[in-house]
Length: 347
Length: 274
Image (tube, rainbow over all chains, first blue to last red; front, top):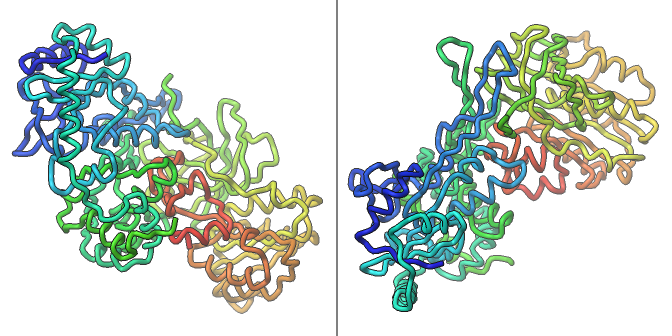
């Protein structure tokens, strides 16, 4: 079912959502954008570039409680799978694709029940980008500038109204309950096609050569000098991990209440770029050099995840490039290895 | 109740033995009648609420109903330091068993060569006792054990028993020793001169500190043992045991899922493994 929503009705629609859900939406913060919980629909920004943190972090939050326990009584130890009746509003295709990838990784048995509990209780409303949001992005190279699943509703800006595609039963239920949508007609669909068609021509490829060969090229470039060069620049701060919408590594931490009787076990985001990420009790660190850690991050997205799931684990959002204070760019790394080999990785 | 793959089962400490200055052997009973099915070289995640969790290999052999397991733990950090302060009847948490374990189905009728360096004997003790218990199933069994000093040797009484057991050949090396030490002095690879195996029919099991693997594998290959018949167990940091937290990843594999036991043929293809 396809419907349209007038610009003037957007705030009313969000207010309807606020009756039933926690609404998480892009808002402005310090001249940039973040996904944040809102109670005032006028705060929402439709036209935004990439947010500082990806919206998936609302499904995979930092410091998520895994267990609560009582030291004197083991039977009081309980798993916590927090649900959150939330709707993520105006999520870009790259971030929708990232959530799809996270779903696949974390639902694989043995599953991450905490993620799944939040994911099941999350509604996603997609928002089509009309054009590339920034310079250093490679969503188009990877085909992740389009999302074909992973959303309940999908908004496309038609210039004076939104075309809204309802993709799931949950999305349909929202539209049916609402009073603000109108059925899409012939002219709405024509405008949608036109916008989609024009949109395709605004994106440009960033990686030279055949992107389908990238994972093979990278595998062959395991001993390439690029890793040493980038490793020398890398400050091992882990910012690229934290902002990545498909980074999911975590550490587990216990915290006691002051009564030293009750406590919580929770998880914190961790990052493979940090020096001690692979440190074991004997003191050995298995990825000792930054060069090896930079290589691991790139290969994990492009080679290891691709081998497991059949598609790249990097959606090309460009956050890791933007947030790297050492100016390490995966686009540059990709282009270096593609050019070095003439893009002819062994298939 | 909410389910979670990260929720430990209740367990009770039923025996504690001091093995060396740094290592203790804990016998742990899994509560609520939960029989524990496991293989040699699998591991559990040991949980102390308020302090944390760590992966610990299982040292006992799966020979009984699995109501108790034995865990050999070195005091090395916060958690293991706290574990060493535990007393009898203390409650702890156990998750697992995790990992693939040793491929027992591949070794029937084979000669077995076991190489245990330092704490590597903790998981291999499970395999050794399993093999001795089913001794008729296997050909020649040779055990090589290495330690820094005589006082660091784990499971001393058991090793004496293996030495006196005519059905297995046991050799011990220590790096440093007093003159009263009558066995081999030197690194573990020095023991290979005593080893006489049929390379076409031998399975090797190797566990030890990371630095040991390269040298031991070279000896095994020099004996003519096939790459696919050399099995090694790897140590990495682990948090979850369910292939998610990322710490145990070696190139494309998660050691807690696809390991900790890898054949040398497979490990050789992982640049980060050796």
